[in-house]
Image 1 (spheres, rainbow, N blue to C red):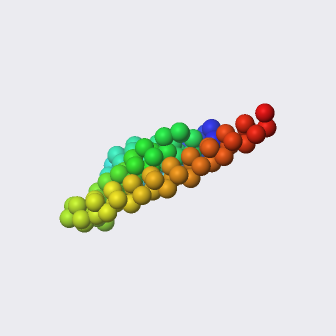
Image 2 (cartoon, rainbow, N blue to C red):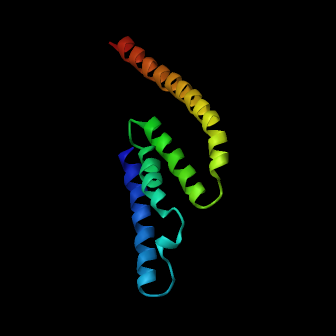
Length: 120
């Protein structure tokens, strides 16, 4: 899993560096501050990459969802009224996903433990 995280960080750094260099050479015009909600990328990118290597996938998934919602709000795709209407259903879905993921990963861990004890 560490290789996937390094690969993702490598791609992101190459893309950012290339865009920065092209802007410095005045081949393109790009300014991160022209993107509304650019600061949400500090939540979205690490959370997305954390899904591939961290043990705390639930926390990374929660932060990723919050970051995406904030970004969409800053882009005027979502409004506060819509988010307030969707907050409770989103919480219910996330709790349901937690139960499903816990049962899937715990059953795999339990199966691995029984397979290891059967070998001995």
